[in-house]
Amino acid sequence: MILIKNLMSKVKGILINIFSKFYFLLLISYLILLIIQGFKNKKYNDFNSSKIIKERVLYEQFSYEIYNSINSPLILDLKIQEECEENYQPLNFLLKINPYYNFKSTISISHLFNNKFCIPIYEKLKNKYNPNELKYHNLLIHSININNIKNYYKNDKNSLNNICESGYKPCGILDTMNNILCFPTKYNCPLNDIIISKNKNSSLIDEGYEEINLNNSISIYLNTNENIERPIIITNFISYDRPWNHEYQKIVAYKDEKKKKEKDKKREQILFEDYDIFMRKVSFNNFSFIPLNDILIWEKSNDYLKKMLNELRPSESYYLFNKNYIGFKNYEELEKFKKLFKEHDYRNAPLFKFSKTLCPGLATIIINIFFIIILLFLLIISFFYDYEDDGFFIPIYFCIILSFIYFVVYISIYFLDKNKFNIYQFTFDAQMESVLNSFYKRNKQPVYLASIILIIISLLPHILIALAFFSDTIYNCIFK
Image 1 (tube, rainbow, N blue to C red):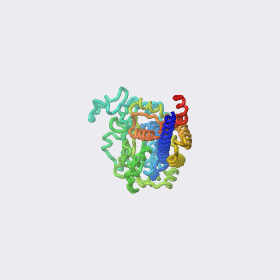
Image 2: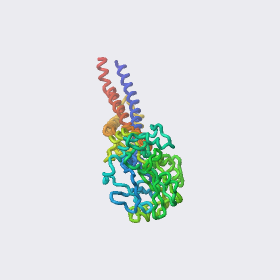
Image 3: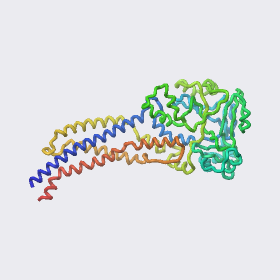
Image 4: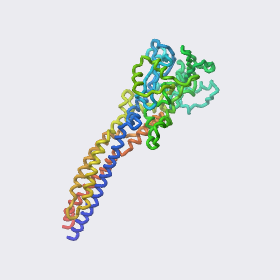
């Protein structure tokens, strides 16, 4: 019996010795994971060396960008005037002063070539327009994807009549998903092309373009003909070069900058190598660009523009770009999106909430490094500790308490935030889909991996402690 008791005591000492080393190493590994996550969170909340927009802005602006696009009014019955007449409003152009910044250097201006591009205020002209019919979600209901069009022949104008349902006509590409806009026949088609020239071009008039001559020798040609090939125009940009419609694109463009170690002089090439594929550059005939000085003359009363020019390094030459709606595959996909991303509160969205979950990681890094130092110290001591003679290694109590604290904290956060880590699938704009993909990559990072590890860590001590401290009781029950 004594032999069995001594054997059990020896086995107990060996088990505790092995367990203590394993327990220290496991807890240290877990803390290292949290430190890695802390560095990722800290980087997430900091500007990078290029001072581009932070990743969290990407998430926080995600639904705002989409709703801002799909709520933009159609450009119907455009009039170019010095001042807009009653019940008309000026079409705003987004001037991007400097290509290396985005929202800080994007300013709305209302003049182009010293004139205003005026569109109807549809809500005030209900005798002529039905505002609900002109909203994106209703347009999407009647649209048809370009891949589903049959019996269309480019050179046969009559084939256009077979594309849309009765009472509707094809008026161009509605959105970035290549949905063809089937528009009520009672309206003129929305603007789908604009060409600006310093000389008259009779060939454009022959093609059905409307010519508008301005008093500064500029001719503007507008196209609203039925077609299925030209995207309708919704958003207009004036930019130094290909503009960035979404903040995230700069992040995408710069993601490999550190690896590539590109110099400043090559940044422009990096910046625009993956530019907005849906953006179209407006043709300028017989002149190259719009000078900044001209824009300042047209916007002479725009004090905010002057202020921003004093703060940023602007370009001296600009171009005009436009694009259509950010698109969804169909109306059902749009409705799925609206259920998760609230239209009137873009903060009420999974990506926005997720961005708030990742708080600065500096405190996490410092605290966990402190605990790792303590654990390493105890691990070294454990090599000189005789478990068989002295019993259970007392500092393991510290590890058990520490693991319980981490477990309670992180498992609580997990249950509070687990809904922010769901995967949401929509069939929509390819660029916005890439935002979701980057979101999925981040939410798969081991933010809460510690919780799973700690479940195991918290169970092992109790099992081994029970074996260690109640071995005598087990022995007495079996052999006495």
